Image (cartoon, rainbow, N blue to C red; front, side, top):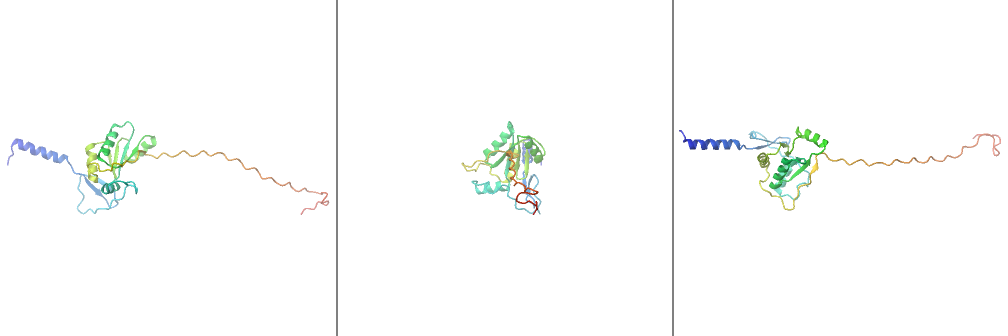
Length: 207
């Protein structure tokens, strides 16, 4: 059956749109590692209980469902100063009401740590659980946040505040300068007993 040209064009357009809107599937292996893929999980795959990703109490003040998602798939944003895409990524997370930690990359130690973490030194970097998204993409970040189970609109309480940004490598406090210790005075020694004959010991006998 031949379709009219106009209807055929519409059918092709809809097919192209469906192909471009790929689904993202969440996989959790037996060790609790979470990855995201465009391939559905195998039928015989055994779901595992995801491990808690944030410390106890870190999600205090969040609605129950959002706290559960944040514990399973914690979000961390890696940024630097004078990074336009970093600001855009931060705005997306804040606007959508995603609880996240921010790590700043400033020092050489931070850059080296970022390279070990992601294999490159470009920013921004977003991690959702163990999944890393390199570079900012509104559509891609939103797609992966959806797959992780984060709400599409903000549900954070008005009083909630994300923790302040911290350096990627914790700054170690400078060691305290120790004052040189004064040498203890040498103990005074009693004068050695005289040897040889003395008025009280004329024979000079030694005991």
